[in-house]
Structure formats: C-alpha cells, structure tokens
Amino acid sequence: MDESESSAPGRVTVYSIQGCPHCLQAKATLRRLGVPVHDVDVGSDSELRVKLKELTGRSTVPQIFFNNVHVGGNDDLLKLAPEELQRLVTLVKEEPFPADAPPLPDKNPSVDTGGATDGEFKCERDELADLIEDLKHGGVIGSHRRGLTLYKKSFSGSQLVDWLQKEKGMDRAEAFKTGQALLQKKYMVIARGCGKKDGCFGEGKDTMDTLYRLLEDDFHSALNTGQTATCSPIQAAELALLLREMILKLFSEHLSADGKSVDYKGMSVNPVFERYCDLAIQLQRVELLSLSREEKLAFFINIYNALVIHGYLRLGAPTNMWQRYRFFNYVSYFIGGEVFTLQDIENGVLRGNRKGVAQLRRPFSNTDPRLQVALPDAEPLIHFALNCGAKGCPPIKAYTPEDIDSQLRTAAEAFLENDDGCVVNSGKGEVRLSQIFKWYKADFGGTDEKLLKWVLDHMGDSPKKSSLQGVLSAGKTKVSFLPYDWSSNSSH
Image (cartoon, rainbow, N blue to C red; front, top):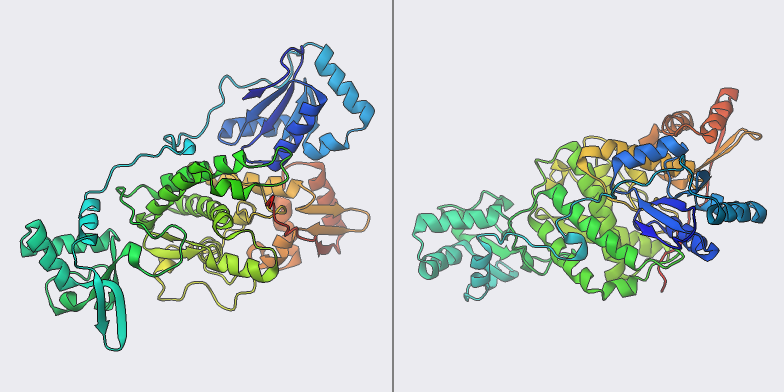
C-alpha cells in the first residue's frame, strides 16, 4: 500500500493491480494534482476484488475514490470537467475523511511465492543432478554415426551402462535402473532408436544400440534450454505462479511512470531476469499429464504470459505481420520434455487443439504426445487472460487453479466493460466488438446470434449490458469489429 501527501485530512483511494498501465497513468495524474493517494493492490486478494465489484459495479482497475466519491477508472478521471476535478481535489484537501468512504484493508495480502518475486529462489537439488554433471565430464558423450546420419553429443545405452558400472561402482541391474530413471526424469532423451519410448531402457540389444542425448544437448530453440534442470521436480502450478509473479514484478519495475511503455532493454540486463531464466529452466521436467482442467488453465495461461515477455527480451518486439507470425510460432519453452510455442499453448492446449489464425492445420497431430495435455474443448475465456504484449491486449495478471473460473470470468467482464472490447450503439442497432471475437468466432458459438448471447451472458451488471439487451430485443442487430491495436508497448 502506497501513501503520498498524507498531511491532507482526506484521501484518494486507488484500487489497482501490479503491472497495470492504466493504474500507473491514473496515479501519475493524481500525483500531479498533489492529493494524498492510497494505493490498494487487489491483484492477489479475491475477497477484496469481490468487495470492490459490489462497491463500484465494475470489474476493471483502477477504481478511484476521492474520499467517498467514486470517480471510476483512468478514462473517467481524464474526462472530468476541470471545475469538477478541482471540486474533488478541494474535497480531499479540506474535508476530513468521511466514515462512509471505502475502507482500507487491515493488511494487503499477496500470493506467497516463497521469495521468488525478489529473485531469491531456492530448491532441493535432485539426487541425479550430480551424476549428470559427472557424466558430462566422463568421456562418454561424443559423435556417433548410424547409417548416413551423424549424431553429435550422443552416447549409446551400452556406453552409459559401462560408465555407471566402472565409474560409479554399480552392478548391472542398478546401472539399468539408473538409466531408466534418467530417461523417465527427462535428464536424457532418445536421439535414435528404441521407438522413442520413455520405458526403453532395459536389458537387450535395443537399449544397448540406442543413442541418447542429455536434454540440454538436444537440438531445439526453446528459451529455457542449454542447461539441465537440477531441482527436484516442482509442482507445475506452483512453478508457473512463481515464474509469473517474478516476471510481473520485473515488468512493473520497468513500466514507465505514465504506464504507456515498457523498457524491455532495461529488463533484459536486470539481474532479476537472470534469476528468472534460471527458474524457467525447471520447467523442463515438470509433470503435466496428471494436471486437472483448472491446473492446466492456470499453468498454461501464466506460462504463456511470462513467455511473451521473455520472448520480447530475447528477440525484441515484432513490428509487422510477418514478424508477429514468426514470433508466436517460434518463441517457446521446453516443458515436461516437449517444446511448446506460444501458438501451441494457445491453440493446441487451451483451445482444445483447434487451428489458430492463419494456421492451415491443428497444432498437434494424433500421434503428438502433447495432445495428451490439451483441453478436451476450447475455453473461450482464455482470450481475455492471454496477454500478447500489445497495447490492445487484456491487462496481465497471475492466475491460480483454486479460483481460475471466477478469475477468468472477471477478466472477461473487465474486457467487455472497456470500449476496446465492446461498443453498443443503440441508435443504429449496432454492436462493435474486439477483433478477438472475429478471429475466434468458433469459440463463441460460430454465429453472430450465439456470439452476442455469449457477450451478453458474460457482461457484468452495467448500463452497457442494459443497452445491449435493448438492441438485441429490437432485433436485426448489426455486428461489426473494432480495429485492433498491434502497436508495441516497448519504449525502444
């Protein structure tokens, strides 16, 4: 909670979330007015968000109060007539804080991230991590030819077994058991042979002739590879929340004072970003197949939003259509032994393996192991939680499995409250919607009628909802789509 100019008898209360550009803009405006500002972060307190919704009838942030007078959001603050704004400033500077003003919470709770948000993450070292380090320097890894193909940085099953027996003093049965554990824990992967099965390490010619690689030596372009994850596997939902909270805090630190741009270059050289990258490496060996629907939603939404920022820091912000296509089809993490691009996460996992914009086929084939992780059907609400880094996207935030459905619904309500999400023109009988509804129309029912019903059902109680109900009851509603702001929020 932040307080400034506390000598005045009244106060301005700003309910906000971390990393919210509109919240920063509002607070910058209020500072220029010289009024005392109490900043209340509602991002990690679901009960406080519910109270705020009851108090204001809105799901968006910021929500601003001058003493007990509710102004609304940042746009509402900027639209105030000069004389009305001066009246409110005088109210706060001269009138005592009234008893019926919105109360401040006794404390401002935050998600317990085990200290990860300040970059201090500690984990239990996995029992096999030291063995892998020894194997790297054991003279086993080299180049092997099979037919016409040369497999660099590889080793055979027989070489691994012999090394474990000779250098680690294991008997043959224990050596095979250790090889199986290295494969199952995804310390190593199959380079050639053995049918690419995790269970393929046991007595027999197949195992002995099969070529393996350490995971960090496997060839892919994911942003969290090049090192081996040495922590004991962390629960997927917990790890995703740690990553999201850390990079959201980093994002907030490099968001401009007016909330309009992000210094990605500054973020990339921040020591906290290096620690974030170390933590992202631990995604390599998380277990995904046992996740529930709620855990998958929270995990992959948080990872997607973090990966977008990581991609911006490593590759720069895309500036045209072709660069955007490459960005979302190229930027990836290695998660649970498989590579997931941004497109794979959005369209493969969260949309139930549906074709995305400008895609000719589904992300996952019937034999793709990642298909086991995909949701059974598309979840329309994810479109209001995924942040693509452009100014027209929904605000970034972290999601938790325990509260995921209400969090997603709140995100949808907040998006539809804004004029860049939905505009209702009662006089013309027209509804203008974000391009998101055009691109993913199939997720919202596939027809204009079903689309409008979905929008109506997911609006909070507001004058806009009443206007939409009136337009729909009149019949012959015209649906059109608003321009989408693809401009980058990078300050460079």
